[in-house]
Image (cartoon, rainbow, N blue to C red; front, side, top):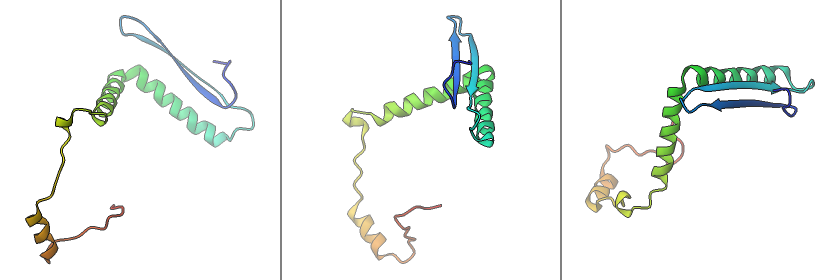
Length: 109
């Protein structure tokens, strides 16, 4: 992949109807590109190459999960959306109780 623009990486996947793939990776970092950063990016590229070659089933599952999540976020069926309303008796008890731990509305770790 020597035709890549400066400071880029490339991943080309040739696919076959039988489900096989041919994976080609490459990079072209300019001479003044930070060497440590280039090494980190090369490791990421090799990691992608490794997973594509030896664990495509895992990547397939992750892609499937992502599609399901995206579909769930775009639900338009009103029957699938729960409109939660807290019971007034319960909220009143929470306000009165001294053994209820209240959490701040900010970030929790």
